[in-house]
Length: 490
Image (cartoon, rainbow, N blue to C red):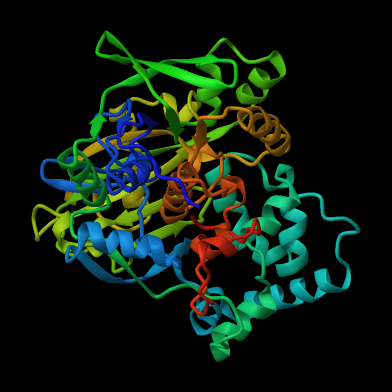
């Protein structure tokens, strides 16, 4: 028999991104009044929407597409008629030419030319005949399946921009996880015949009229209306534990500290930070595991261009290694309401980096100058039409799966598993590179755990909610397994 959660049971949630807000929303539907805290000045986390002079900027580009019916129903319930249906168009820019993504055989051959296309084909045959004896690295894994020439064109540069590591140093396990089920043969067959059995990408998705932040701000409003609290600008500075339970957290709001006690605690903050803020401090091996989890940061340079239409894509992947920018978002092509002026276009130049590295250390003015130079160098716009700009920095945007991450994460998982009144959820809370629908699902199942169900959140299947297959079989949350099938482009 399921238990109910007493209405006076105090639930404290750390993090006001998709996961944390979903957990809070599920609780208010049960009559509970949770308290959510977040150190940022607005809700949404990585999925927030920033506003500059009326122009709206999505930090990363967040499509509302899911195979999880429970999540889709929740989106519709909260935002109802404020969605736009968006046709997907994304291309790869390489050596001055645009390649359709996913692969279009005519477009690819036209851009590459007959000679290069044949060289790619023969490179593919060569590596099929003489593969590596052992696939230890990303480079070896991809080369065995696509050939060396295609690897250099469509995999190497962009992957190294995103992760800041040579492909020869990224584990083959990572490649197998990110691009499982793809090969040159399947890509060509799909391009030529659109075969149903071949995985392909969705061609349309939903998007809030005013960006993803519109969703999370509506969550925030509904939580407040039901008597819950969402406290922003509140940094967690200490997590107090006693035996196998968390007793309280201490938050800092502009110099004012406050201790919040609770019966249950749920967190979507980076799990490495959570460990470091625990009092008493965990054993050295656990603390060291947290210290050694790595992240990639992202800088978005928002630029307002004095052109009504700039390019037709939702976003572009920039594979050419001579440019530092990794991806360019055209927010007007996500929703026309993202632009304050119909005669201008607001775009986001995304730079992937690590906190403290050369890119991260640049001033805002230097980053804007770099973005403007690269935008003109790409031939997308002339300097005289590039107007106002703004910089947004996102630390810990992408959990890194380096050689030691699984070892470190397993140490942390085992330790946290002994806390009787705590659950960690979401992308950074689980150090898992997932989409917002998967983060929301972990939150929904966490609340069901409070009601007596027994879901292992670490085994939530990312394949169902992340990989973009068109033809899928519906599953219930109870059937979710730990299988993972993620894609290389995010």
